[in-house]
Length: 215
Ligand SMILES: [Zn+2]
Image (cartoon, rainbow, N blue to C red):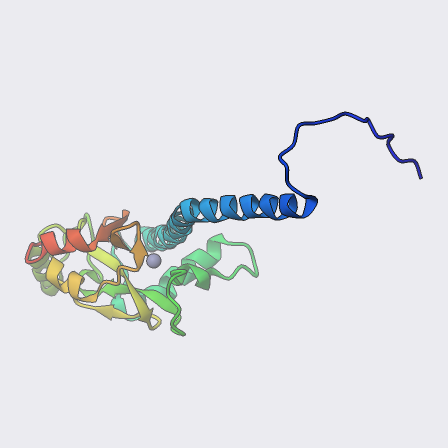
């Protein structure tokens, strides 16, 4: 094995022994690493938060698409509260490849509970049509009570929900009481879907401001 010949170049050095130089080098490296960690940790934490929120928003986007497909087939009417998530999963299944687990779209990555769903349906909008007036008196009464059906939260983020979980919510205070806001962006934020089909989000501050307001 060849060794490089000693270039014999004299370099100006601190008057430190090999041992001291070794420890000084490692000290500098350790200090730089510690400083980088302090600077980068909050950025990394934020990136992880953003990524988790994006997958939660992907979930509500997929659910809203599935509900839209249901509406197209059923006279523009929203699903019934009793089986809404079964219906949504059925439509997701029909558009995914075989063997793909669409159930994952029902779970927010921050929901560590053993329950199957992180989302709750607003039974106040069940069966309502966005465009066609119904002959059903009860449905027309719901529509009048809600004001704007299209802007009414149809599915809200609520961790630890059962399959087909639902609750009647007629104004923002009832949404505020039930919605989970697990995403720190840095404001506490949760996902929801408007009955008109738009996937959206609200912060705790938004909900406090909207309290007692109609949809
Ligand atoms: Zn979420």
